[in-house]
Length: 264
Image (cartoon, rainbow, N blue to C red; front, top):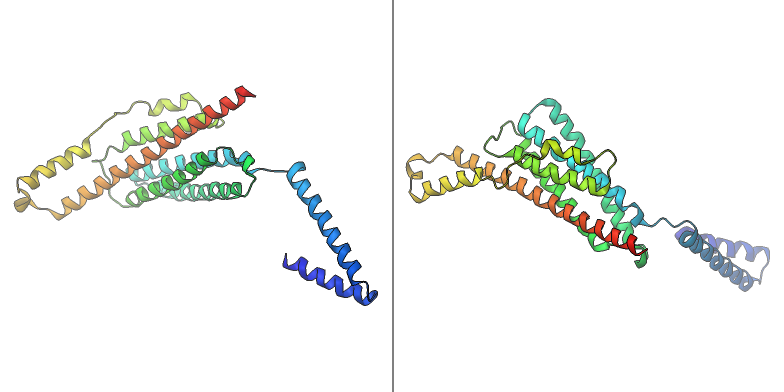
């Protein structure tokens, strides 16, 4: 814009040197040319070659779901195995998840600048972007424990992993991800619901405190360990809650899309 402004001033001065006294004619011609050029540009961009951001939503959502799924699984592997190859895989998956999150956020920001009639399901897309931010943050928090040298057999990691991976795969099926089908759910379909391993440990510790046994058997390492185990379990629960929320949102969007198609 600044360049155009100074170019206009330059043209006015140049033509005034060539034909002194015709400043008003030059000014009028320049204004007319600018209006015509702006109208042509607007018409071409709006009617001939428009690329509305909502048409790109699906691809960015698919990438975010795929990469967060791979990121979570890499963190789970690192949490339970501690192999060097798992650490390298985790770093790559983390980078992919962050890039996908940034791309999805940029897509939503660009969508806000489109005309109102080209912003379908804006609230749902906004909610998906927000929950994707949360999901990536929760997985990153879980990875802090995964990068430690300790293992946490007290946590029902496998059950949580199966539940979360099931929700991820169901989202992929809803989005129509190529190569993803109901068969992919088979390795994860056998899991316990309502497992209470951590709750049992916490209840035992609560009874000890109430009975004042901690005065004799107080162990700082044990208390710290229980705190870590509780935090890991809560992170698994938060991740599952967010993934389930996203799955329900995608189901709603899929139902709305079906209703629109039926009306057409």
